[in-house]
Image 1 (cartoon, one colour):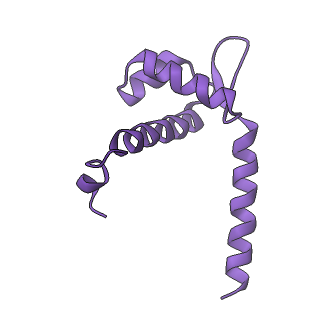
Image 2: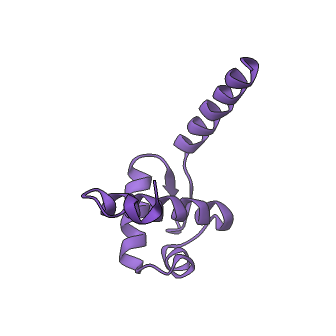
Length: 95
């Protein structure tokens, strides 16, 4: 699917939002621990949006808020990474 078409349908906004949230996770991985302001600035998004993304990610376990209000990657990402590694080994063994 062409990139322009991916955003032209009714779910285009959701796709863009998901991409921004994933970019935020990637940036958090590079900078952790990181604050909302630093992440928002790095991604060139409003601080309020970065804060909402981080709050949602933290509520789901994909980010963790520290006592000093900075964030690190959360434990659910470890679970996903482990599942991805197992899948790669399984698929690799079937070749």
